[in-house]
Amino acid sequence: MNPSAPNKALFLDRDGVVNHEVGYLSRSEDVRWMDGIIPLCLTAQSLGYKLVVVTNQSGIARGLYTEQDFQTLMAFMRAELDRDGITLDAVYHCPYHPREGIGEYKREHEDRKPSPGMLRRAARDLSLDLTQSILVGDRCSDIAAANAAGLQQAFLLAGTESAPCPGSHKPVATLTEVEHWLRSQSPTPNP
Image (cartoon, rainbow, N blue to C red; front, side, top):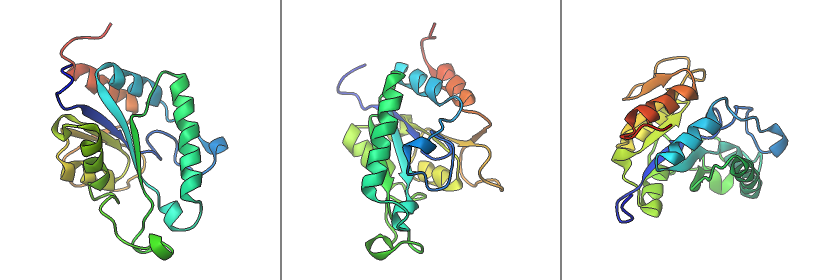
């Protein structure tokens, strides 16, 4: 890869995509990886994608856990993924909520999905070409953020939304489908 060429990223929502949704995850003992997340990340890395987590964290806004609790949990998750050869290139989170937030956390923010703030910050920080990047989410807000940022492709993992999401995206039942899509886009087949 040309070192001066912009990078591409696989953006991942955290809860419901990287790990099972447990409702305001804040403790390492509650982490359960989603089926297919390890092979998906390994394949994406092998194809030159940066791995970037973009996650709304309204539990911080609601006072259910602190930003330090979030950082501690993410350090644990990064270490666990590292054991499988997976390196998260960046993690972005939005601790604000416009209605349910407490104190300084009660406000709208450009990083809160469906706004594309976290994706755009990642593009600046990691020299990403968003038009070559993709996102996997489990909510309509993920799809809206991906569309607003101009991503090449957004995938909506089934199981969370009860109604269809507007916007351009590909519904998938499993993360394995996303992995197969990535392989199909690769100019050189992997062994």
